[in-house]
Length: 206
Image: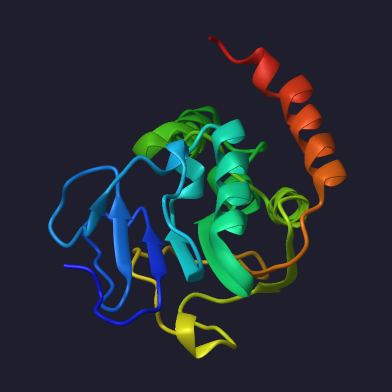
């Protein structure tokens, strides 16, 4: 059942981690999912008050991830907020591989590092710099980088449900960011799409 109130808050890629008071959207028909939909084909909502997507963005092919950010911007009300969490590429790189290790350890590191990239259906791992550029290009502003479960906005406080790992000093294992819908930036978006196409997407097997 959908929430009875008029506010539309979307929990994207909810899986079986239902949030009460939100519309829980997932590709699979799992317990607690309100709307079964492939959001890479578009978000069929309007005047959305908030969007939350936890450990979702990394499961999308890079061009589809950018499309999702643009679509999320489109359906949000002016000035509304989105909160994303996604594994931190910097943490994976620094904690899962040590160049000076012994050969047996480096075999284990190779497996662990590639698990970070390809495990659990991951398509693309983001670092903070690239995620920031993508969000700004998609039309978000006032980016706020948050700790797990923490937010300056009560709407998002304590909302995470995903399991956690130990952070390394000054480098969180997961990036959590909130962005406010602002004016579109079509030139910045076009530059981002060109960059990702030339440097990454053109080199993927079709």
